[in-house]
Structure formats: C-alpha cells, structure tokens
Image 1 (cartoon, rainbow, N blue to C red):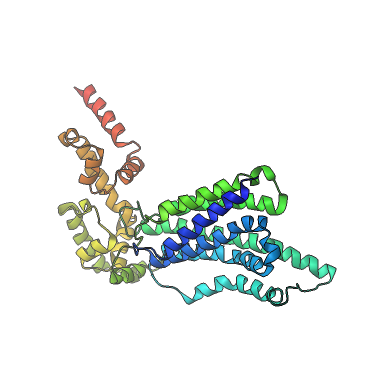
Image 2: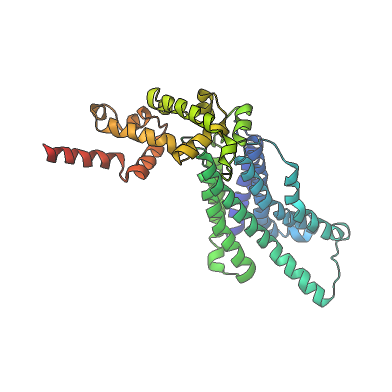
Length: 375
C-alpha cells in the first residue's frame, strides 16, 4: 500500500493532461463530445488526487477545498454521459436540457454551503443524522450506477443506429468507449467494496487499473475520427429518418416506392455503386434524387434490411466471385476487400464470416477442395 498515493498522484496528473488535450483538441473532430469527455477526465483526476492529498493531510489544513473536490465527483458521471450523448447524436450543439444532469451537484453544494462559510456542519437529531448519513453514503454510488447503465445503453443503441446510414462501422462504432465502460465497471466494483465492504485485497489493485484506464482512454480518444462526417444538410436529412412502421404508406407513396426501387436496382445491379468504399446513405440518396428518409424506407420495406446489411450483401457476393477467380492469385485478402467495396480488412473478415459462416481463407479452401473432387 506504500505506492498507493504515488500511483494515484501520477494517474491524476495523466488525467489532467488528457482532459486539457481533449478540451483543446487540435484535430477539431467531435468537438462538443471531446470537451465533455475532457471535463469528465478532469473530474476523474480530481477524485483520484484526493488520495495523495489525504496522505499529505490537506483535508486538515484546507477542509473546504477538500470538501469541494469531493463534491465535484457528482459531476463525473453526468459529464461522461453527456459526452456519449454528443458522440452519438446527429446534432453537434449543447442542449439546454443537459443542465438538469448537474442538479445533484448543485443540491449538495447548497447543502454544504454553511460548511464552506463557517466551517461547521448542520446539526441534526440522532434519527435525522442517520437518514442524512445514509443519503450521503448512497447518493454518489446510486448516481454512478444509473449513469453507467444509461451510457452503456446509449452506446448499444448507437451501434444499431449507424447501420442505418453507413456501410462500414469501423472507426465510428465507439467500441473503445464501450470497452472503457467495462473497465470502469471493474473500478466501480472495487470502489463499492471500499465504501461498503473494505476488501483490501481488491482495493490494492485499483490504482494500477485507474492508471491503465486513463492511458487506454488517451490512446483511443485522441485518435478518434469524426463519428458523423457529413455536411450540415446531410445531418439534417439523416435526423429526419423515421422509424415508425405503423403507417408506412404515409412515409413513401406506392408510386414513389416503385420509382425509387427501379433507380436503386439500376445503381446497384448495373452501376455497381456498392463498390464505392465510402458509400453512405446520404450519398446513395443523392444518386437517387431522394431524401435519406425515403431511401431508408425503400431498403427497409422492400428488402427487409438496413442500409449496412443491404450494401454489404452485394459486396460479399462480389468478394466470393473474386476469391474463386484468377484475381485471388494476384491480390491478397486486403486487395480483395478493397476490390469488393470494403475499406478495411477487419470489416471485410467480420462481415464475410457473418454472411457465409466461413472466413475468406476457409471459403477458398472449401471450394478449392470441392473443385478438386469434381475433377
């Protein structure tokens, strides 16, 4: 336990640096989301620095400062959740309703205001004191659990949502944030043990996990590309996509549906638009002279699928023909992927196995063996 405050001090320093970099990120991608993520990391750093400050007896010299650092913890979970909301939203602006997430922090600040002024706590009867102490003990853990669940659910929804408008989810699926939440869950479990059970064997590992989580977040967050890399008009068009299937006839008329389907078949079958590595729903809609809402509806209604699956099924068929042709001897797997319209080997391998049940290499071996038997 001797290294506990040292490691926590290093971790808090790393968190402050990362927070500053995210707020002043030179890449200018996901600007609002990164700023809130930066504020989350800074408040996380403040929570971690409590340990070395405690060992330096700062809580005795400056009790009001130490108390304020403790209250800032009520901002940590809301900042993370708002950051995830911004990462996963078409709208790139701060919403007024986000203010409500800071209400618990404001309430506890008001509650502790007399302490900041006089240095004295409220005086309660024994029964009231028990209730107040219980509320103070569970408020932060309860808030953290609620926001963790909200954040994880939002990321799950995001993964489904991006399948509606992109043919490649790699780099924008925010899988790194989901992984961070899982690491954070372990930290929370260790923290709850500290608060409620005081299990020393588990607690001694948390400083190293905290340090790992900050460096993990730094590595992925600083290289994250724009999640919704579209123009303002395209974002407005995408936000207008309706998912209500109760009255499909009102979304697109039968005549318009047939017209768009004919154009779609021409673009896919004849012009092979699916071979465009950067194909997105707005780009397809532009080629159809239709809105994203209309294009999405045609694919959902007539083909029973989302944009991601619809496009990649054609790409897989193209890849299968390339793998069984002479080009397989000239191109590696990455070359086959690009020739088929995919823009990464990972997406190609994952999608190919999902659709065929085999990896590209297994598929070639299987059909090569079948051809040998026929001969």
